[in-house]
Length: 213
Length: 365
Image (cartoon, rainbow over all chains, first blue to last red; front, side, top):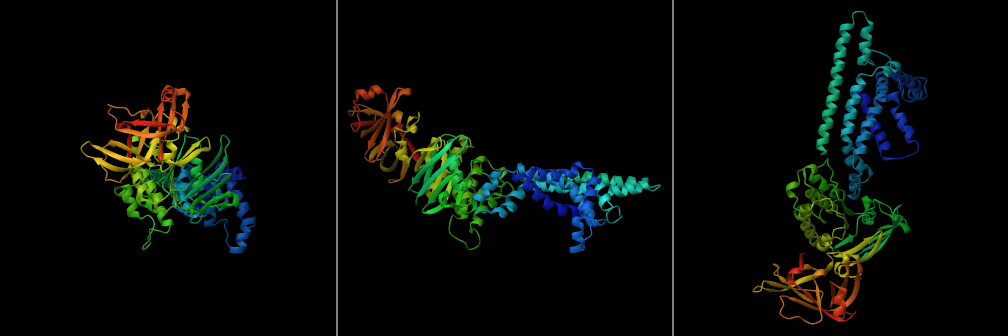
């Protein structure tokens, strides 16, 4: 589920980060605010908004249901969507920062060497932003594993389908004698978070040395 | 081979209006102080900056004519650009950097020939030992050489160099200049070279465009421009005319070489070049003594007859710069106003220029 969330979210996050980093357009502040909204909003509210939009009777949810027969609410895909929305700001921020740090002179050099727009994006811009993209993805993945509020609101708590770690811990605590299980799960959660952070740090460092920074 | 350039652009701080035409191939140096608009001109030539009005033509090929709505984007101009700070792609090896433009120009694939060859360029720039390295492990001078190679391999019709040596210390500069001189003779490619260092003009320029506060104050061949007493260039402390010469005679016994240039002869300390070899000499204006009669009993080797073409007073320095016309060229001499009176120097009058052989700077081309 976390992999799916990052997989879907990442290309969109790159596109958004690129728009925000490179272009000045009307509505840019609004887009910026929208992207960062899940960061500030209580997760339960985000989940509720998703429910309104993507629910079976919601404007987007009903269309998806009609055209493709896709139901998002209370499914794994739905949980992935909720996670993707929640970690979107984290990804956009980290990608945008590394895009802004990249020297625009390198793109100019690529232009004078005959590289067109798409060519430049894939061979110069994205590789230069790769530290930010990878770090963003790893942190996002780790955050997804621990998503709680938005998932429980939008996709409920279904073991094996939409249950994230904190949901399982919460469920275990509700059951008499579930403390041991909760402690176990908490340790797993701790380990995953730590590994995720260390991995992102290490990847970022490696890529930066590769880029000679 | 010709290059015609016209540009008009209004910046908040400066109004630019520049036009020049160069008919010879080779290196055209845009010379002027920082902030005079040289780099704007280069950016416009590369297509990275679109001025209000601009027309650029190389060899009858129109790169831009805003009046007619022509504006080729940089990626379709076939104009190479060497930046001040190399701008190598940090995520690629030196080889991949070098091949970047070559691939996109349609060369470098199996069987494709023509244009600047990889091995040839690598050899000319002496970068063979660097090929597998990463840009951040190179020194400033090495980086700049790779950047020049990368631009050349993109098979440009015009090479732009925007102060390529400005960010290097003098040792690194001295390391690169010989490579640039070699390139100049090896490649038949027009080069537009921006600098504010006179040394680079002396070494590399075939033509010079003087730029000042967004305007072109003069353009012409390097010998013409450096020998004009009315330009600011002549009023520098180190001002002096540059002449294109050939070796004409070696005198082994006296350890002297006679050079011919500008329709005159100059004896200089022996130069180890075959007869007929091309080189350039620079005669600093402050080293040239004027006379009306040939002196006797003097260590001097060069007594060059000429005519006074122009007298330009430099009130601040209490001196006068005299432009001495030779059969096909000119020299500059800086003397006092008193000397002008005593020698009765007048325009078109005859004069002798006395030059010590050791004060002639020989520049190997």
